[in-house]
Image (tube, rainbow, N blue to C red):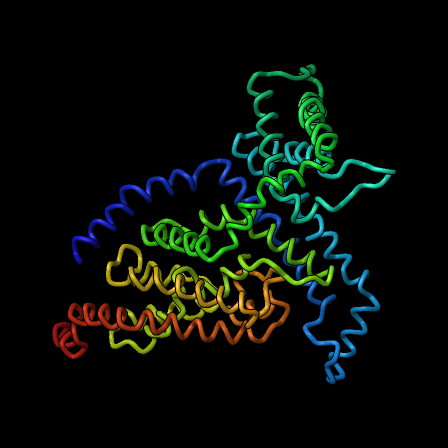
Length: 436
């Protein structure tokens, strides 16, 4: 067993860790991650309003409050959904601008000008004017992958021209802001000579806009990413990275954000159309069902620490309890430590895998509702689970069950680790005698 553990740790430390380190610092990965983070406030507020428009009550409910909410939602639906339409409904606009901005900063270019160029380029291919109206069908979840690709293309084009000093050169007496605006002339023209003809070609040949064509290409990948095996692989990679001391949630979460938001957008469109919801794997599913208390689902471990006979573990439990309630678990991960700790390796990997399996089966079996809105990731898990599923109380109860399961998974390994520490700790009376 020790030989197997040594080989596993060797692979993590010598192979996975260096690759993950390079990937986490790659400029495009960082720009995509930071771009999605920048757009998050808009998505949370928009999702919150969607819940108001679709009350979590049956139309046959006898509760007076439920009937009042249902009537108000039906009467003022367009008013309530306006914040949703201006946030989640056009989320791809925010993402296109935010990714380009962050990528431009990594090149030490003007982030604002890059964001404007990306926004224009995305509008050219996703919302061409028709009958003096701009279509919005591709500005929500459908356009996320297009926004991502267009943002990178527009910024790289701008960088290519700047590095080769291609542009209009004005006298030094010209104010910098005017020079910056002229610096964008050639990139704007280049967009209209590249992306615009491509968009026209796809429209004429396939009768669809570029975002719809890209979604058709990514459709099988999106469907595959919503399966249990794909979820388990993502969970496993994330926690292997964490175990190696690398913030796995940042790397894996950044790579999954496009899929998560696409799935969320589809669920919300189905909800507003009165259709059954189809997608399960969305960020709140990860945050509130799989990693309760943070990566590794360590809330159960913290609860065990609180009653530990080891002074070290008991102090870590007290220190970690409140942060872990808000899904911040760095104190327990690095204070235990969990990182590169062979005793806690198996439960740290296994607990979230079991949670993911049970939560997926429960959602698939319609025992709990599917995610329809974004909740801040720092929301306590039972509240966040109910919030993101349209205030489905069953989701909060599932979190409690999953917390109990993860606690049971950690228990035998916690006892082993506790015995190891107790053997090293000096009993209090003996320590006082030594001090005297």
